[in-house]
Image 1: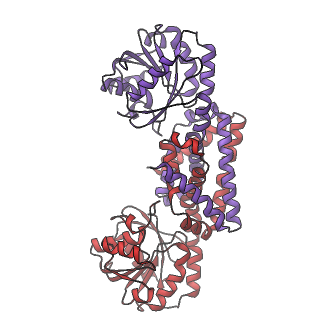
Image 2: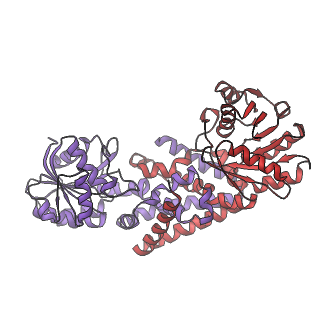
Length: 281
Length: 281
């Protein structure tokens, strides 16, 4: 249990590369095949020992695999899972590392053959760095991984995917794909929108006066723009709801500031401080 | 030069306490008097060796001082400087550590006696921690300190206050009080508003799904609410301008997301990423 003979990872960036490395380092996989369209990142991953072998196509890479993890950008996951399912051995488990789940899982529930064994995952372990050069060991230790089984999922398969992440010392949370997407709109997508708008709103002349506050608050604005555009679009409804709530709070702060209403400003700041303190560092 | 016999610090919190400590540790001051209304923080500062002596009133504390640094919350600085100037020796230099400068410096230019030697400072070294227990050594090393002389300032006094911060290895920038306030609205006040609104907008259910992005982006929301309310109010005009620009960018992001306009979203994210990358870590 939790030992894999051959793991195929589609997309060996920060998440896929770190995953391969940890499975190998911990002796949880005998072999890790890195699959990608571009040879350069695969070469970096191979050289760094994140994977043991490379493959240019999914058909080639998933042959003989007992686990496939699709770690591509979110807009390519469904197609990769469908291709992988068509080519892999019948007993092979498939999961992904996509940042949004509802649309993806619904499409796969509909289009995958009934015998396919897919369970969605989302390791909350991204950063503003990307690519196999950014892969680190023990990336998932203490991190939250959401696993999103559906009515179609066999319980044993959900267990096995939960076990995969637990074997890397992650904290596993099971949620429905819909609930996952509703909550990450606040915990992940809204922070990215807020940080990016803040960096973009900073005039050049103010850059030499930034300090810890600006640097912390804008850090994730350095993330990959194309990747995050696709993430926002893939969770459009919930992201819009979260963004509207954020804009409403900023409007309240602005109006209170306009009328020099210290009580209202302090009330909002106190609510913010309590939320921040409740979550910890 | 840059050696002080007796430094009086009004308000021994993170900034005042760290300042006293560094002046003593580096042998730049023979004696540091901590002045405060409450005995408990003064006791902590004395016990930690941040100061060498305490005083409960400004009149008592500034006697015989050759440098006074007012490190109180921003709404109390003007009154403290006026009191200190009335009681200190004639050759004593006075500065402060306030987050906004224009209103304060204008009031002091008008109300201080002509012989008083005040020059405004703003060390960009705050954090979400506060109090003398948060004081650290070498807090100012590599940090930016803005010094804001006016037409009324004697050049030698501005030099001496720049020298004070340089002797602690800070990077000193001279700006007019107005230009300082206009720029920190973007580099400091807007990040605090954005981070606080983000923390306050996060529903309880989403808290267990936060990761590095949310944690970084909301870190400064843990700062002291009353303190920051006064800072925003003391820079109301510029903070409102910066906030309006931020709201406009969020509105552009929302509208682009509403019409699934990937190009516009990616364009804003790319501008944000370039700004973030240009500033560094």
